[in-house]
Length: 124
Image (cartoon, rainbow, N blue to C red; front, side, top):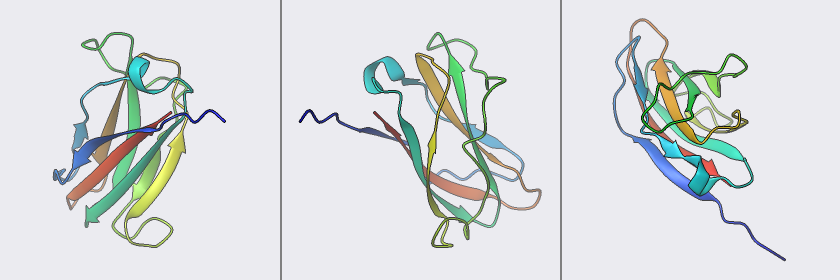
């Protein structure tokens, strides 16, 4: 039986995102990591704000990254009490459009508090 590896990249570790602002990851070259096109994120949200997680795509590593018009947010309304254990920890699969480069953006969508996310991108 052939076993295909899963690649995991840490994209956000303990960086605070102020109220109503966002943070975008460095570009991930999917040509190197995702031959099957399978993706998920594992994340932990701390702080008293609310997070939205989305992906951005581009055909060039240093080009203009956009959220495709057909895209759905990876996760919305995530707080320190979200997730199956109500502890801010969650795991979500998503299906981005075919693209060679991808970034993840986390936005604090509340109006009064910051968040501190930790997020890993899993690819196969």
